Image 1 (cartoon, one colour):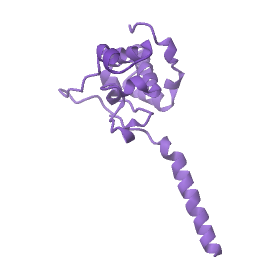
Image 2 (cartoon, helix red, strand yellow):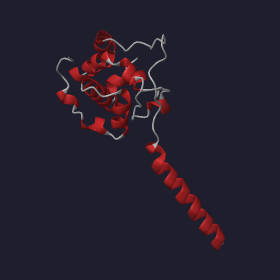
Image 3 (cartoon, one colour):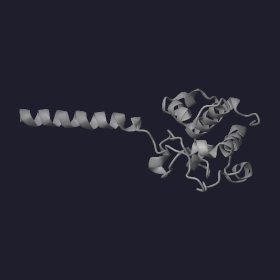
Length: 149
């Protein structure tokens, strides 16, 4: 009986610990840019976002404008809403091929962060490292309503 109780305790602890670290896994991304000649699926256009995606805020459209300027960077970034598990996305780029990115604050923050860092001269690898550290969480979406430069 005592042995069973110890075994059950260890098993419970193992299950609890593994669930705790499940989200610590890095979501899907491509470590390199697309192969030469590889065509990426298009980012949804601002017009598609406005007419087909039921957006409430200008920053939702702006995120797609920013994403369209850096598709190869987004291709190399993970998305920390973990849509790779639920929607089969392969990188942050996948989020902006359809309406997912318009309705997910994580995707929106990551896209603006990636755009900002690209404009500052950071490489996709450096941007990915920042995303993995959670630096995208500093992006205030309500301050992203202005035009994309």
